[in-house]
Figure 1 (cartoon, rainbow, N blue to C red):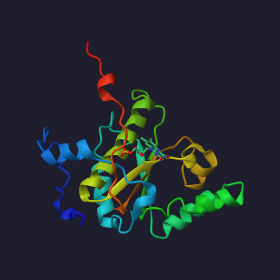
Figure 2 (cartoon, rainbow, N blue to C red):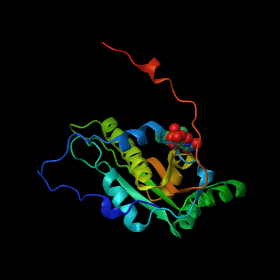
Figure 3 (spheres, helix red, strand yellow):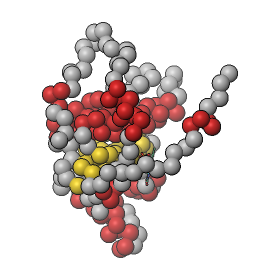
Figure 4 (cartoon, protein in one colour):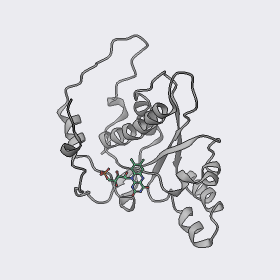
Length: 204
Ligand SMILES: Cc1cc2nc3c(=O)[nH]c(=O)nc-3n(C[C@H](O)[C@H](O)[C@H](O)COP(=O)(O)O)c2cc1C
């Protein structure tokens, strides 16, 4: 059962003192053991509209140099999934790819497209704006898990195809940071091989 949205505290008001530390065995265990749900292993239900609003509100609290909010969210759920799939099918050049594209958003009950709106800025490099969009994707995934849903962060060809991006409503220069699929897992994932973090640590 998903945790109720009412358990999530409201956002603090401006200049209100906030917790800078948060001892939580549950958060540590989530980070230690989290796994994505395979896209073929989703079923309904996914987050409701109210739950999605809550998840997006949490994800939008990521570090954001310059307070630019260099990202936006497009929720693809319900009948919108078929409409978005049809848009992708429309840019395919053969019938077989179009048929696959048509089902892109049918595989999970909900997909949140995280769009990076990073643009040239006098002080904040575009790279940092894009990193913030990546952080949004991970925060959304983690928040979704903590609420009780499976999630998976995909990109795929539509993220790298200008016609697909335009068909999904992106403006010139906007990028897809990720499609965050959310729903109920039909299977418990098993652990995968992980990058050896210890080999990737140096100390000055
Ligand atoms: C930016 C980004 C894009 C990704 N796109 C895909 C994708 O298109 N297809 C895919 O199979 N996995 C993709 N992945 C990987 C999955 O999200 C996932 O991390 C992977 O399946 C491993 O599972 P785990 O999250 O449990 O470690 C992507 C990951 C990132 C960070």
